[in-house]
Amino acid sequence: MLRPEPIRALGLISGGLDSTLAARVLMEQGIEVYGLNFSTGFCSNDQRRAVGRPGEALHRLRNEALRAGSDLGVEVEIVPVEKEYFGIVMNPKFGHGAHMNPCIDCRIFMLRKAKARMEELAAHFLFTGEVLGQRPMSQHLTALQTIEREAGLEGLLLRPLSAQHLPETLPEKRGWVDRARLLAIAGRSRRGQLALAETFQLAQFPQPSGGCCSLTDDTFSRRLRDVLDHRVPFEPGTVDAVLLKVGRHFRVSHGVKAVVGRDEAENHFLQRLRAGRWWFEVPEAGSPLVLAQGEPDVELRRVIAGIAARYSSRRSESEVEVMATRESNVERILVEPLRD
Image 1 (cartoon, one colour):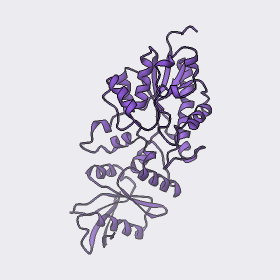
Image 2 (cartoon, helix red, strand yellow; image 1 turned 180 degrees about the vertical axis):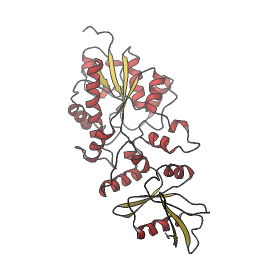
Image 3 (cartoon, rainbow, N blue to C red; image 1 turned 30 degrees about the horizontal axis):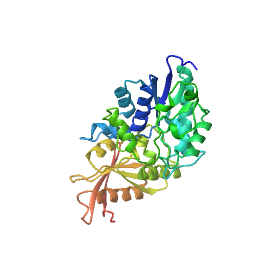
């Protein structure tokens, strides 16, 4: 069958090594590649940028998808999907992984949206950097087939890194892609990808692999579950998500939580959120800023003051004065620092 020119492929580009290699493998065959990246509001790099910790390595702050697109010479479109995606996180059809990560539903959601964009761009097929057997929940054979079917992409979704382990897709059958030049990588070892990266002289990529999803993080997931369990208003893609990554968290009642800054950068970040909230610190001492979420009454303010004293330089004293402030309201609270 004659190959139409040019062949266009739209790929999900995370900026990680696998999706970068998948794009490059297709580009080596003369295929015109476009990239798509979905902003879910749960990327760790976005949260690091919001906190702005001095001395943070630049690669931990940059948008890896845009960096990969620049390295490849490929246009990558960033699509915000925060609110819609949060519905998937709360109620995934195929369940969560070890934490709050809805991996199978996540792939289906993104690929459905990518399919619509593929049609708008008049691209011939979609591709991803998925590797058979690399991830236990979403990349075993049954999961890959389920994702393809549920996304309405049967035959149109190419996975170049593992293609020779998988059934032929329409792009291969029609001769748009040379199957013999696709790969047979499988499993959790990264040796095949690293060797290919060396061949392509790709030097910049996250280690050990791509992705910056906070939903796979144990601490973040526990804090998010706490938010949902206590019916706290939460908007992904805002400071709500960043707060779950910042500080030490103490649930002091059903409706009130205290967030304790762990260093100067976190204290500065919490300072930006003081409007309309109670905040606590120990004057004339090395002290964290402690931010209250919710409406603490007098007794709960004493509890939070004790937390502030516990993490100050005066923690060993029997009684510490803590300043509790909300707008123009200022209270001086004498408390014993909470003990472990």
